[in-house]
Image (tube, rainbow, N blue to C red; front, top):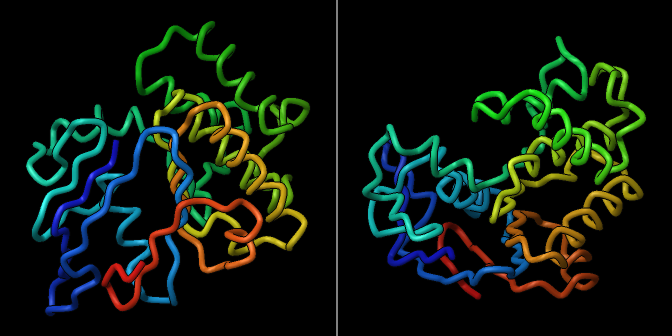
Length: 217
């Protein structure tokens, strides 16, 4: 599903965010990427999502070597991935439903089917009653649930999240993590970057622990 071999990422100026790491994530696993601030967690998530490209080594996701992928092919690879950011990246000039519809519209799905699937995604995260609301009218936890609905509406095989609860209170954070666990239970591969050790104790996921760009556990 996700296989990294001697993966490295160096940014302009010589900063090495990831240094020669190798790992394998099997289909259907729930994996937490942990480590201190600056350990390389966000960089690794961005590489898996094809937001960044490796400097060295290989990264294979769903059978595609992202290290050798043509840029024109990246949008097609991303259709099988769902991505949730800490800052949500919602569009505040349109409704919750329209935010979730956007990936389906880009994919060219007929509008009736797109609305059906977007409504189902909102229902899954408990926001169907707020489908007409603008994101600015939603609480922080609701905004993050909206971001999850948008991430899963394309029925991805891999759900990625980069510190998805960093800006939330403990109760909202617990709700968000429970949603991720539910997707894992139905076979979605879930990869979450987080520094919160309590979640590891609660969900017992597989763990990739980073330290200054190196995989230590």
